Amino acid sequence: QVQLVESGGGLVQAGGSLRLSCAASGSIFSINTMGWYRQAPGKERELVATITSVLSTDYANSVKGRFTISRDNAKNTAYLQMNSLTPEDTAVYYCTANVWPNMGELRDYWGQGTQVTVSS
Image (cartoon, rainbow, N blue to C red; front, side, top):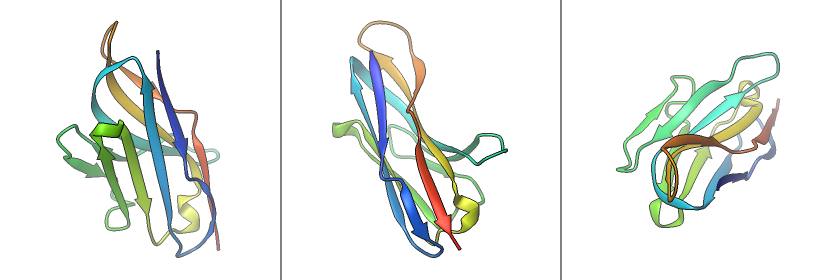
């Protein structure tokens, strides 16, 4: 089994910063791409950022220049540094990872989500 656990969400004022973490654990052989999605109330889940195993990154236009995704392959952990937050960034943030488990097939795993609330 593979588990993803997010942490670091919370309440912050507009203009502030938060750092999210996503730790993958369990029966993991290797992890390909890791990423962050978010879902605001009444809206579709949207991609925020992704990072490959060789640290190539991609961002949604709405967060470019403000958010930075990174990862520590030795720890099977991804991070999302969020700066200059606005109320529009308020959402539940989900981590995802494309994982080769020790037994089984390559598949995507998701965390349980962490709430980020930005007050104006």
